[in-house]
Image (cartoon, rainbow, N blue to C red; front, side, top):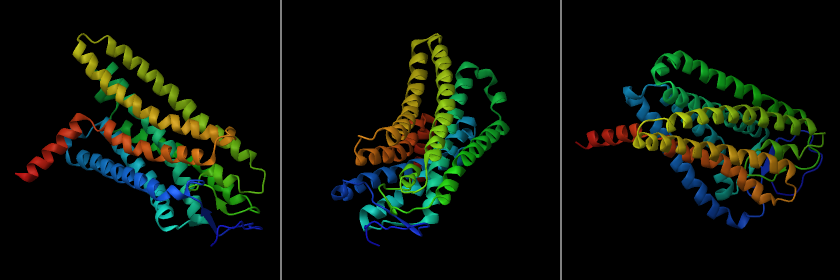
Length: 313
């Protein structure tokens, strides 16, 4: 199908994804970067799952949460990056209406899920550092499983209205989405209905997730930092602070692009479109890349090295 605007599309069977509007000439070069990041993210997250599964000593709350985060990153990457690469490499820009809705649901569901898991990891670190004697009795396997289920249910429920709203609208302008994936805001702009409810709901979700999760994480790490500075030795303080500092960098790499992308899409009318799309792509690509690197603890690296050493001998 051509890129020409299509009128009277009350129920389009397909949408057309433009990739990164304004940077079509650089799609091939951008795709090399995206593909490299995707490959590293897939390898890193599968490595965490493999090592935790194979090493019984890592069967604990923190590593269970890391596995949840790795699975979330893998699903989120698989739901978006392959289609992006097909656009960049093969000019395969058509996406079925149902596939677009599915992709949209997975993006919003698993993005919210990542936020919830980061809260769970902050809770684990808080208990481990501030109340270590009660860590094993507080974060039992049952509590970890219930926490994971609560995160999954919250994310699934919050993402559902996005798909219902998109299916309910009619599209009388065009079926061309100026984006590299089915972002809810980009699809909403194609509808000929009043989409204010969509914008309000999007802001509600952003502030519900970020507004609840970020203060909880912030309070946890404030208490953690207080506990760190009360440690008796300088080496212990530096070691614990280094670990928490890397975790904070990972958290910022997730929340800052999310918050900035959401606000600029709604209020940044003077921001160039390709900048908005690039920020949205960074938000999906960077966390799955950084999480295995930052959360890949010394224990995981040591077990992985031990595994390959044993294989060689």
